[in-house]
Image 1 (cartoon, one colour):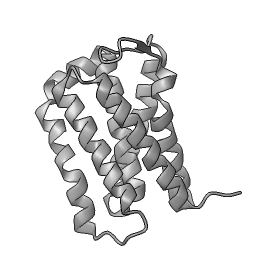
Image 2 (image 1 turned 90 degrees about the vertical axis):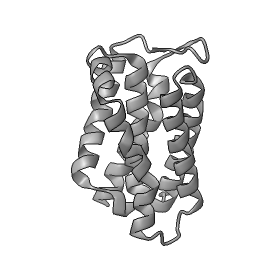
Image 3 (image 1 turned 60 degrees about the vertical axis):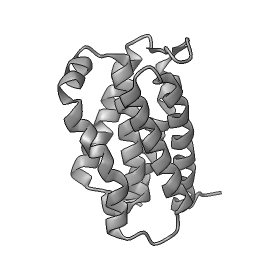
Length: 167
C-alpha cells in the first residue's frame, strides 16, 4: 500500500515530536539548547494538529521566525564547538535542521530551496561526523547514545523531503 504525501508528513511530524521530546531530556543541562528543542517540538506538534488546513503564508512564517534568532545569539561559540565536533552541538544541529526540513514539507510557503538544500547537506555531513564518534554521552540520561539511535528522525526527514519535492 502506498502512503499519501499527507500521511508521510504526519508520520514524520510524529516521529520528530517524539525525537525532540527525548532530546529535550538529554539537553536539560543546557537551558538554551533544551528550550529551542522544546519550542521546535511544540511547533511541530501544532503543525501536526493543523495538517490539512489551509494555513496562510504569514502564519507559516510566524511559526518558524523565533528560531532564526538562535543563529545570531550563539554563532561564535557554536562555530568553535562545531569545528571541535562537539557531539552535543552536532546532535542539536542535526535535529534542528531536521525539524526545519520537516516544517518545509509541512508548511510549503516556508520551503526556500536554497536554505533547505543547505540543511539537507548539513544533516548528511553531521551524520557522517557522528558516525566517526562514539556518540553522545548524555548527561540527562547518563548513557551513551550511539549515532544511529540519534539519526533516525533526521535521515527520515531528508527522505520525506526528497520524495515530496520530486513527486
